[in-house]
Image (cartoon, rainbow, N blue to C red; front, side, top):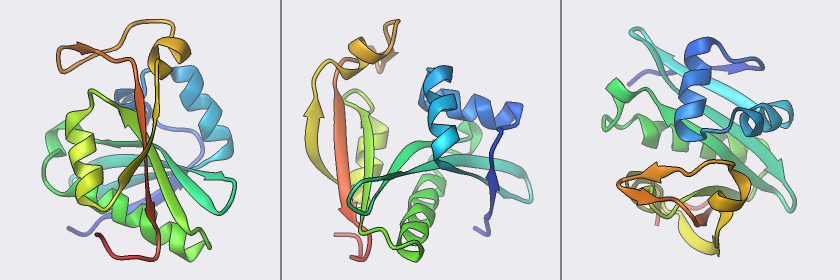
Length: 157
């Protein structure tokens, strides 16, 4: 699985479509692209996924967006993107990685927890407050957001 990671500031149409698949708010994406570091991962067959990393206080790096091309999902690429984020964080002096996802995002929650992330907070009504439309996922209305973290330097627990 030889992936090439390339920084970008303005996403291509395909990259933006992937960003929107993980976060349906173009205005939020535009906002965190201004202050974050964005990467596109690809291989010889094309675009695999996108990743946006945001610096936060206290040496915390947030994964603001992570998405894998639908036809390439469930092949280990999400794990590879998370490992790239961990290595990038380590190389840049961060001590903690943070990611937030919906309570109905079962596949993502499973992936994050398998990679050593632990739930540290529940933000009630986050999605009903920050988005001007209902988001349905896995047959459920998305309301609450879970915040997960993991130490950068430790191996997966």
